[in-house]
Image 1 (cartoon, one colour):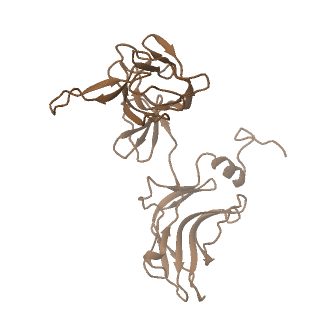
Image 2 (cartoon, helix red, strand yellow):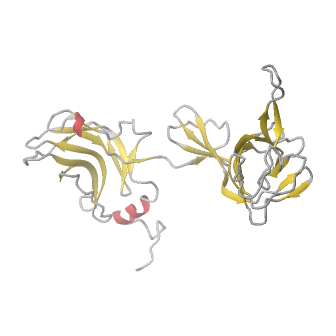
Image 3 (spheres, helix red, strand yellow):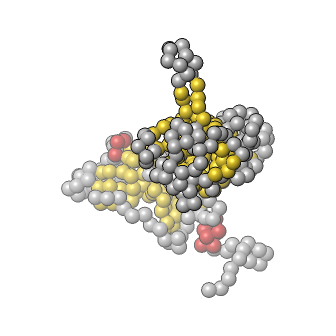
Length: 337
């Protein structure tokens, strides 16, 4: 097959097939509309021998289509004894050199769309059901089947004043916005896909581990300035009984903000007949922005109703002696520095 490139001086786009091949890379086939509530090229029925096609524009196989006035499309009568499922389509015809709205008959199921890029190529607008022996299509027997196409994503800078067209995607730096017709609304910011790391545990300044064969895994995902984090440990050895609070590292290179304490929930499930305990874990940025510094559980300070409640730090041996078979899970989110 010979190589081809265009358009250049002396090498123009010379045929409709060449145009179609080029233009269909610019935009997907479909109706140009802000959203499905838009009436562009929408088909309706009213119990007559025609269905009505609203004004609108579309791309079909790289060709442009415009209907600038409400159009009636004739329904083909159903002479059969069972209901027939038809389609209204936009057909790009290489032989006729046109794109036109066509009423296409089917059977007990909708007809197959033509998909010959060098012959007839069709996209759907509506599905119509014609009762046995009938030549009309009622409103309830028309189902919207439009394919939609839209504007490509644009880049922008804050406050540039560009109109927020409905459904338009906009990229500002590493943030993604969508237009709602009146303003740009934030959708997402660049982050990190789901990733794992090995948490490092300590009690005060002393590092320890939960057994050389323990499951010790942290899984995190970054979305903008927020980190979603789960740490899970399946204990295989009994660490020493330390008198200082358990702490654990956050994902590497992702320190927490110093503006606030972040909270996580944690659960310790004993396999040694000591039950289950739950509590809150938290960061203490004044001590460290790279660690969860406390795992705390509620405790009662006194037996009277007005006794001040308090929270206790989880230790390796308090309130449970954490031993092989126990599992510890920490789950939550925090904000980046």
